[in-house]
Image (cartoon, rainbow, N blue to C red; front, side):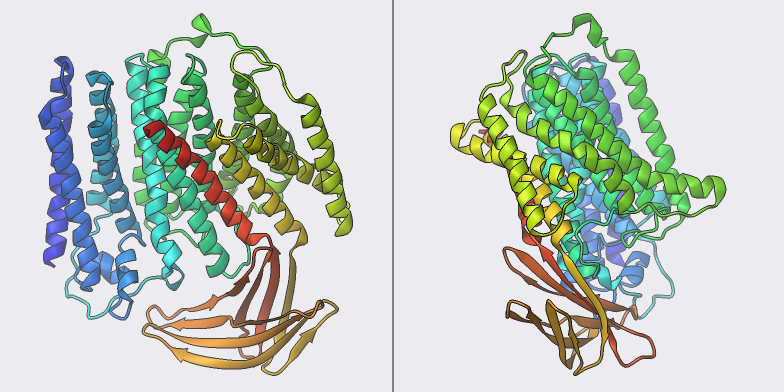
Length: 624
């Protein structure tokens, strides 16, 4: 109970520090030659109080303090220590406290590390950031307090959802939130710079670090969530266009577009309207994701079923922030048309602008596919599900010119350019088309759209490889990121086109056999762990080429809450994954068995790591 009291009053003190910061900021803004040392002191104190509050919640979980309602709802004495700690943010209240922790940390780092920028700009950024922080403080204390007291004190907790008891998902939210909350600094900074009319190349160089940090963490956070869904949910895939997956993808698309726009602004005062709108949009989409997930509106394996009134608070708060940001944009941003630098059609600026249009189109498709079912349900009470076919049909045709532009754009120069190496580029394109045709012909996949799509991805792949050797360390971060993206698209295409699946029902001792694969159900073992009982099924897999594998998927029956989960067994090689999962058939003595061969699965993860690594190199290069 003592930890809950400390945590609760630390939140109140943090809120008071935020209100004091408003007063100090307005007072210092009038006489802003130097940043008032009290501002830094109270910013640190605010962060310190949130750290104390967060650690209090962690300790409450560790000692299983069931007088705390959050601990009671999301923990159990038999849970391993690692999952007790990760359970701190594996729920609505704890995850929002983590949001607040990162918000206060980032603004403190921002004030410490921001040098050679006007004091008024730093103060105004702090004010906008404090609007967000104070809003989260009020939200936590009034509607989602992680320190609510229970009496009488229960002897046991309800436990954490078993599918959340996983190492990848334990570190997924903190990494993802670093990306989300990084966008808040970009948002606050953009509003401050717009208000002071200082959107300039100097500001772009300064804010690019924050864009890169946010983008890297958001990319890695999405990757961890995708890996978790692949092996934990038993669906055998890496992306299902689940609404909660989509709400993390949308700010990533906006942030990626912003990252490319800021490269233009670093060199000349151009695309400033794009940059302000994208800064607002990125944070708005991050907040929308929080609203949709926390309100319980979205029906997903990731969502927390909560009182919709909490979502209403976030929605009103979001509308206030959007209205404020649009007011600042329209009343303080100067018209670009009055002083627009000219650049030719064949230039790097134009290629970035065209790719921006493509990215905004992809973002619009994902946004419509995610929120359309919600609005339809509200208007007509009709429930529909928007699945992969919708996204594939609308995105794939436009992905082809997008990949071609990614291959050609980096070769162009700023302002005005000539396309060099035309012969090499044409030969690489023809070679890519021929190679794509031969691959599909060999595997009896004679679809025209697949040939064009694979050839465009191969084209980007070969062009970026060639640039490594020709340009060597010139634009190395860009080359690595673009190479990783081409590898990602190729891996996804080959994974979708050439994967195979067998679904059958088997008893122990039975065999499934077709022309390519033989599955032998050898035996069943049982195992007892601290917080679950396990049934392990042992299979032998024989391929037509004579290769043999052993796979042992399992079923786990957790004790608190009492839930059965399927744990896949995956045999990973450089070329493919062999994935097997089992399920019990009710009132029957056989198991439902799903066996999949997923080509190039490992390369999907490697490619996303390469994309993030490209961003990391760019960040380190700027720091050095």
